[in-house]
Length: 330
Image (cartoon, rainbow, N blue to C red; front, top):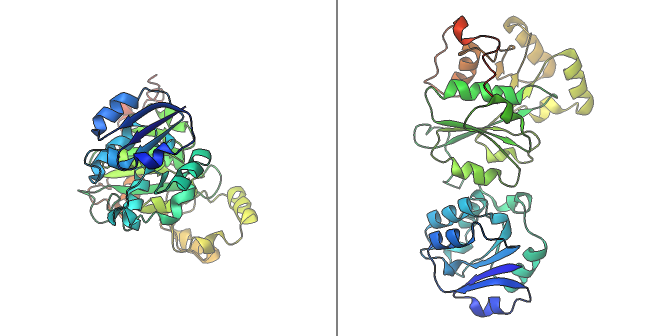
């Protein structure tokens, strides 16, 4: 059963041949719609955007997207010039609003074929969307850093955790993992598990953070991030498996930030590795004790990423903080 909230386009929506459980006409505050439908079961909501009071204010749509499941909402846009621009549509996508149209045919299609991010990614202009961040403005905007394994099990999840623990002394930071639930085992606040569809919405919720770290796993569009770190564990087994799968992998990532993780390659041998791989390595990171409070290697990586507040001092060897069983907090 479906919900219709109509105003300017009530005649158009009246021609829909669908089962309706509830219908509203008029102009409503966003808080009223949230209170009315956040715990109300429905299959789809068709929302005439002009039925939202102050709908030209994108903060109103953001509030709606945070409190309702926008995967079940079809937004009927008005015919204004502003809502026709790619920048406006990109902002909707950044809020997790993927189902929008301007006509009855579009509504009928979306009722049967709701969009995912993949369906609208081609019109999502992150660089031109000011709801995302600029690299240089760490103090006032959110910087989104993705971490992705190139070799299997290269340690993206643990590195995400370690980077968060080191950054949070100086920055407001959160971490998000996509399509997995491994963050649960760290028993840490501000470490969120989500799915590919809801990732843009979760990023929008964290606009007050200085840094959002994303364990991308198999997420298909890393351009949602400002920076992506690609991890390679340079053991013989892992490297040979990687090259067997894709012999051009280093060529494809020649312009990216490649980090050797859990690496036993000495810094003196790193130039040999780069020569043989024909690739520049952004950072060489050894195995890190994830129970230590601070690591000079992790701080070194963060400093190279542009986080100037990170100290590159000696490791913290305070044994009272590094007890083997100190991690069990459940």
